[in-house]
Amino acid sequence: MRTAILGASGYAGSELLRLIAAHERLDVVLATADSAAGTTVAAHSANLAAAYPALVLVHHDRVHESDAEIVFVALPHGVSQGIVGRLIDDGRIVIDLGADFRLRSAGEYATWYGQEHSAPGLLNEAVYALVERHRSQIVGKRLLAVPGCYPTATSLALGPFADAGWLRPSGHVVNALSGTSGAGRAVSDRLQFSRLYANAEAYGLLTHRHTAEMQAEIGVELIFTPHLVPVSRGMLITAYGHLETPHSTDDALDLLHAAYDHEPFVVVSAEPPTMKDTAGSNLCVVSACVDERTGWLIVMSSIDNLVKGAAGQAIHALNVAMGWPEGLGLSNAGIAP
Image (tube, rainbow, N blue to C red; front, side, top):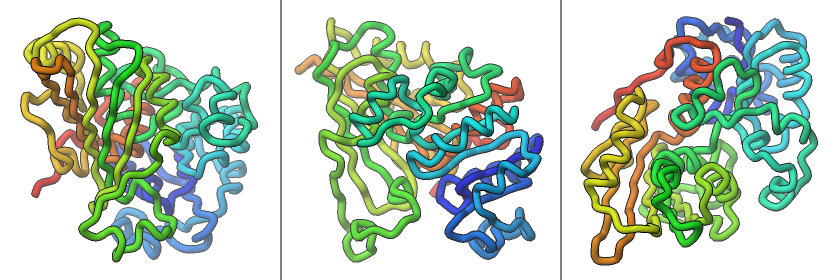
């Protein structure tokens, strides 16, 4: 099907181009990048030169005059609110990788993003496109809101335990490590090599925007602290769950196996995952144990923030929405070393 990618010069957009090159049912007819409009994809991203030797990046407004049937939107927060309504009215399928349609309440956008939502009528049309938790809701939908990378890794880790009633309503802690590509391609002081190299930095304490998304999906109140580490891609979550009733490590692993053994892109491990386990793949590796001394549940998960945390998840959700084989264009094998 004819496909457009808005924001194709960003890290998530470039990853979409990479994965779609191997997707047998998608054909990219339009790729946009306002800051790089007029540049070929090959000149902008050398790793994509063989797959897209002649595709030219254009301004995102060109999507409305294109014949694209499917539109992936990988634009900064707030931009897609002004675009998606017209795309839906024109009969296109829209997969939004940004945060514009992830939350159900327009008021939450004012609280967590500091601005009013300009298209609140579309919030109830969008489905939260975390396939492993909302597969049946995604089928046949035309507006898919792709979860953020932190909420993806956290929800896949803690979600089964919340669903089973293991967790108290509050008192949970999530610590996260992320590669620098999660911050996007834009230049910033904290991404300079001299500051980043051999360093680690917490940011967004108490106010990180993904907190609202996690709490809405998991259904518990939590404290979230993300950390930037000097790697290009990858994400590792360690979540501490406050248990309602005692359970064992075997109980915890059994619950994860029951939730995920049938899933093509989630692997349950008795050993803690590492950040590199999932590199380049659409995999999530999860593990859990219970500290019998304190009674706390510890759950860990690893994803590639650009694949399972963005582009791969978007394609997975589209495959489900269209009734296609779920693995089209996606890998369930990580890169090592």
